Length: 94
Image 1 (cartoon, helix red, strand yellow):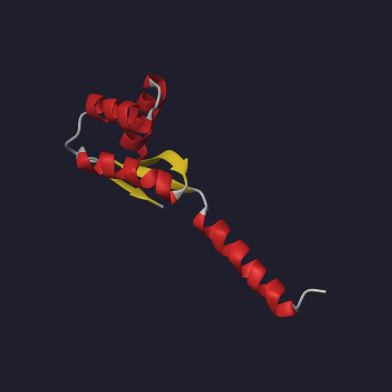
Image 2: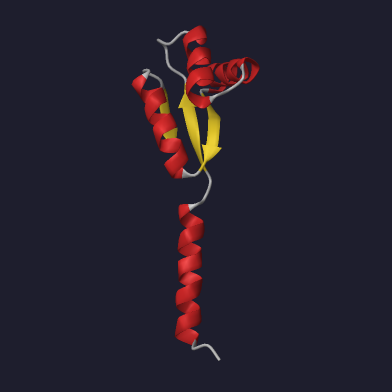
């Protein structure tokens, strides 16, 4: 029979793994200097969006001030978000 402290340790390890793998999202924010075409092309190239998806996200950003453009774990999203930032877009992982 397993010791209670061993069971608690195993549960904590599993919960830590779940938190680390928790889905995150890149949020793209509106700005006053990037053109619609530039944002659309950036989403296609960096986020691998289809042209329609990129256009829809760009309009959502324009009218709502922000839009979630990519979901995944942090390790997957970090280089994508960095590439958006390097292009002069305003984005963050939440």
